[in-house]
Amino acid sequence: MKIDLGFSHDYEVEVLDELPPGRRIYYYPGSSTQGGKDGVLVKITPLHGESWVGVFSFGEITPKGVSGVYTLPNADKLCVVSRGAGYFVSANNPADWAEVKSIPVIDVRSVLFQGIVLFANYTELIAYDSSGVKWRTERLAFDGFRIVGLTDNRLRGEYYDIRSESEETFELDLLTGIGCV
Image (cartoon, rainbow, N blue to C red; front, side):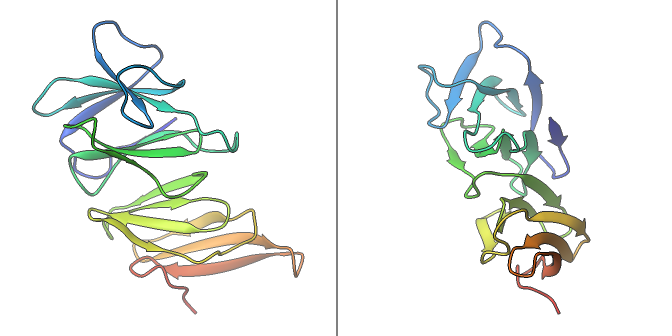
């Protein structure tokens, strides 16, 4: 499980192996306190306030989905990815949550210089900044997309092109999500 705390944040996180007794527990999706599905367990301690535990339901589409905890450009929010299912949640308000609009999440990259977090599925990328979705690519591949290089300004990716039966590469501008020549 990856833990990426690169962005400034107003909370502490700890990945747990089991549910602790006596804590407020929220199940995602839904932020229910009545129970839910199994998933990644994360203890979140806001800078000002009581700690709570989130159970973030495992993704059901692929065993290749990643798992991790990521800080976001908004210092109050974090992202938990649980076997390909991604969730944004406020450290101070567990009821303030949303799902990542990339299914399944197979790669996550924080780009501090651009103030974005990138999420990749098998065919496209989506970038979130502190306001939400910054850009989303068109379909980049039919399958097998992967990020192979990342700088402050550009992303390089590869995919298998079924039409040419070969590996193809591309580059994107991280500010706009538009392909580079």
